[in-house]
Length: 408
Image (tube, rainbow, N blue to C red; front, side, top):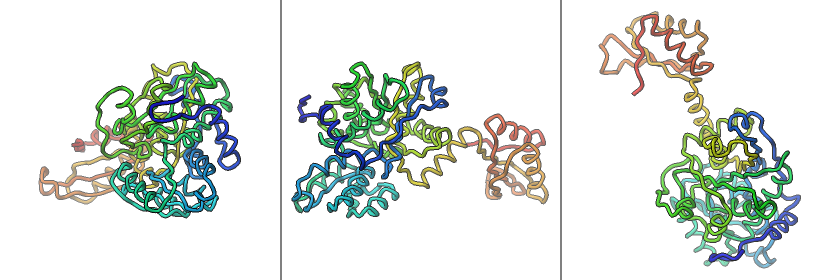
């Protein structure tokens, strides 16, 4: 397919990429999830690209591109811009192939991705608030030092490498898949997946997923004008400007693009961690979140969901876990108005304990100006079994005559 932006790779290019990278990247498993299928009301098959060595599908395209370079290009080195996963893929395989690698990353890139990229031997430059600003700096350095620019998504060789995900997923699934759900940032992954999948089964339907905070491809394909800005847990797909080539491939091959919000992505991370015992980053969780939030659309289908990566900061993951426990009622915060005298803490603790609550934290606040000076708020963070159990604990505290301060 020839687009206005260039020549898109074909199924033959993707199969050639599969041969070239074979044995140098993981053939990650594709597994059916009984529990997630029950939750979604569809047969859900997960492609675990978070199990790659650098914990992302990005290795595939990066390696395919690096192996295409001439000996002179390899000697001079390469440069890329990336929010993290492309950086690690280029850095890791560049190091293996003894190719000097420079990576320009936005200043807000999670520390874990910066550290891992440097650990793979790349020279990392932090520049700009966005991927667009990082890209401008990378292009300038490439011209100055005569380095080969390795684009994270808008390159036929990169797209062909990413398309190998679909070859494996369709071959390895326990039953024929009729739908694929893929996260979209710049569009390299979904472009390669769509080309490969449509060549194998023209009737298969491809759905892309973006975070509502960065709906750049959605805006282009649907001629919308939603803003793309702000903080997101899915920084791997927080792209303001999709590729010129990828947008044409998406326009030709993708059924629809779905948007998910931050809470839905967090819930997706939590569900995959608790049910599948697998750690994914926000961008990867977005795909399952879309399936979970669009049950009517996907009901009864055999769905392949690409878990694109697992590079999430541990501190961020811990916050997600605590927030999910709180949403589910398994962690509750109690603020009890008490007289400031001995014995009341023990009394309330006994009530909570007798009703099966596990007290995690205790604090006193005597500075609240909306209470009498001889009163205080006793704060407790309590672990409960579920939302119903949490309510049972609240009811027990109030039944003993204590007043709970309402949130807000």
